[in-house]
Length: 236
Image 1 (cartoon, one colour):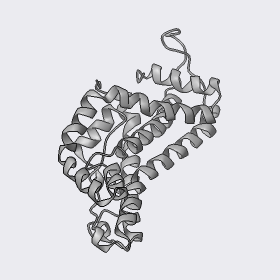
Image 2: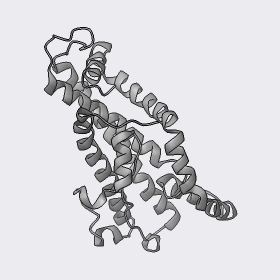
Image 3: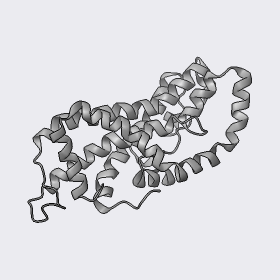
């Protein structure tokens, strides 16, 4: 089950959430435009302004867990040059952008973290000098990887209305596709149960690739900087 975020957690999550959701939806709209559909552009959704993209419930979920969603970009497959192929391209563009952002944040961590001072563990040395500005930046880099991987993986789950459902639907032969679309009416209930009851499992799935990315760009000493900062800020 999820817990309410602390103030430092909110401060460090919010900028990452705004970037992750905005780029996700912008990439859906841009991919649709390149495939011949300008519906998102005409609806004012082909923008890097986060406000038109935010969904209240999906954003709250991202504030308290590494999964969530934004307001879906309007798409009209009628305008696609190759409807089945193009719908899959447009659907993957959002999660793909989040995986790309995770790589960018990981690369930034590889450059920035070695340059930052290390804080002493507050639970061992309560009177030690804290570098709170550095700790907040370390937490932002951490969430930049975790939340983008979480958003990408979550949206690839093949349950309607998530992006994965559109990808799977267009991969299936006609008869299986028709049965899958009939089954889709139960997807919102399954999705809600998955978020409420399977949040811990999803969290573990998300942290595995996140740890792999951090291990690829950081030494153990610099990884410790991140985890000490998160504990000092009471984020972990």
